[in-house]
Length: 137
Image 1 (cartoon, rainbow, N blue to C red):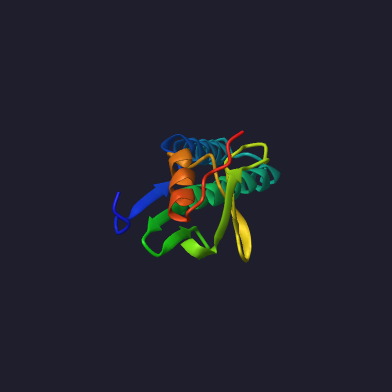
Image 2 (image 1 turned 90 degrees about the horizontal axis):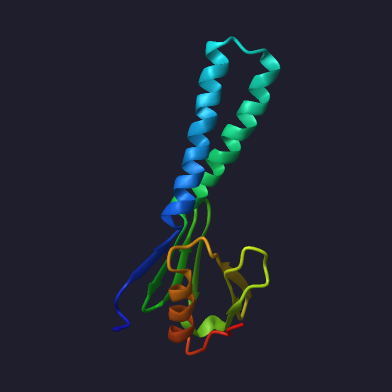
């Protein structure tokens, strides 16, 4: 594969659909609460869950990792990070409960979430481009 080909990895359709459905459900709960004239205290809980799932929708719909000839670029709802290939020191399976891969850089590290579509392929691609081999369990 040529180094100049740009590849983008985004959250899986399943996780994006799940958070979107949860948000839609809570919008339905709000509509029902308005229709039945629910007590005022009910709206606080509904607002909490609407905001909660709205944040997750924004996070998972905007999250992407882009692999290009200059390195790896992460773009999220409120953040942006670029890592050059020579900055990556290690790629290993994460010990976090939801898995994924932990990428160690010269200035810290970050997790390639298992919620990404083709997360294993991304981890292997990052390791290969950085001149490393991923650690397997």
